[in-house]
Length: 140
Image 1 (cartoon, rainbow, N blue to C red):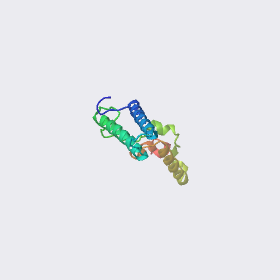
Image 2 (spheres, one colour):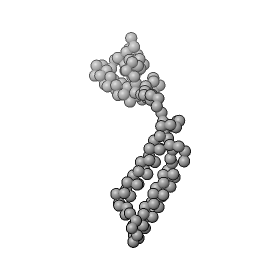
Image 3 (tube, rainbow, N blue to C red):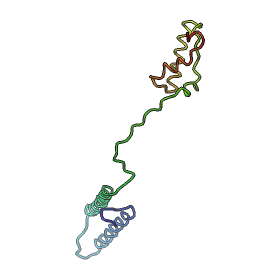
Image 4 (tube, rainbow, N blue to C red):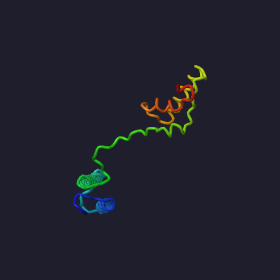
């Protein structure tokens, strides 16, 4: 075992050794000789000490190792993907001709807003993208 490092197999071996010691102590307990008796609390204490020392050794090993899985650098915050014009057009926004009237203009606004939200269109791109859907007289 490397100093300050323990793996699962070594922990199993250590626990197996503790069990072996417990069995030996229990056999002595059943004998009629004047050997000291081990209590259940003493057994638990032995197990806890063994596990505690194994966990401390593992913690020291992890702290001292150059673990590439442990990232201590600040994490990058993912930026939400912004929609581009091609993606905006893929959602088939409705086109507007100024001859359609005020009610149709309001409906066009609502449909364009819906396309903006589905295509994840950035706020600063919305005017540019929406003007791309204007036709004929709406452009003059």
